[in-house]
Length: 68
Image 1 (cartoon, one colour):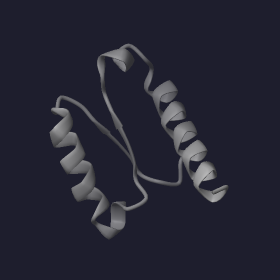
Image 2: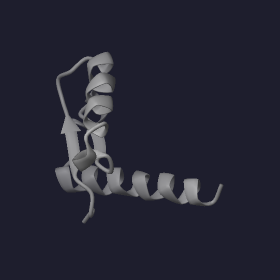
Image 3: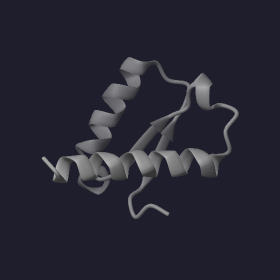
């Protein structure tokens, strides 16, 4: 499981998602939060599988930033 909060957004236009993520990241408590959006490609997936992918993507991104 992820030590970071995971926030899944659904039903919002992409511009709203971008603004909301920016706003939430500006709060100290959610700076390290992981964000995912429900999109047609992942509507039929099980939540556990989606969370594993979100956490896996986060680990890859953090690792690539450390290696720069």
